[in-house]
Length: 144
Image 1 (cartoon, helix red, strand yellow):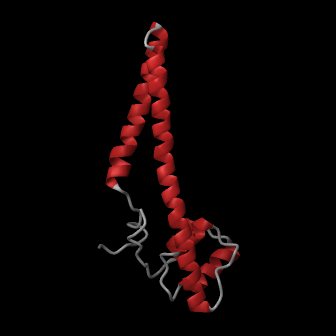
Image 2 (cartoon, helix red, strand yellow):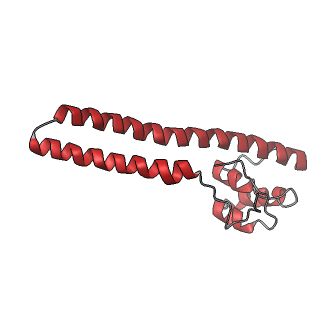
Image 3 (cartoon, helix red, strand yellow):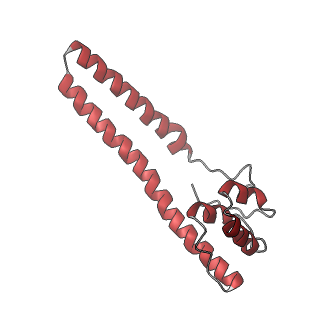
C-alpha cells in the first residue's frame, strides 16, 4: 500500500462512487423525465408512478447503505482511538471531541496523538485543521 498523507488519505470505492452513484443519479433523472412525459400525455401514469416509487426506494437504500456503514466505522474508530488514548495517557479521550475530530485524529501517530487530541478539544479544532497539523501520518487503509 502507498503511504498516506493529507493529500492522499481520501478513499473511494470505484464501484460505489464512480459507477453506482452516477447510475442511481441518471436513473432518478430519467424516471422523473419519464413521469413528466407520462403526465403530459396522460398515458402510462400508473406504471410511471410505480417506477418512480421503486427508484425512490433505490435512492433511499443507496444512501442508507453508505450512511450505516460509515456510522459503524465511526463507532469502531471512536472505540479504537479511546483505547489508544487510554493506553498512551491513562485517560479516556476528552468528551468535548466530536466524532469528526476523533476520525481526523486517527491519522496521528502515537507520539503526536495525546497532545493533538488535547489541543483539538481545547481549541475545538476543525477535522481538516487537525489533519493538517499531523506531522507523522499514520495510514488508515481500512476505511472506505
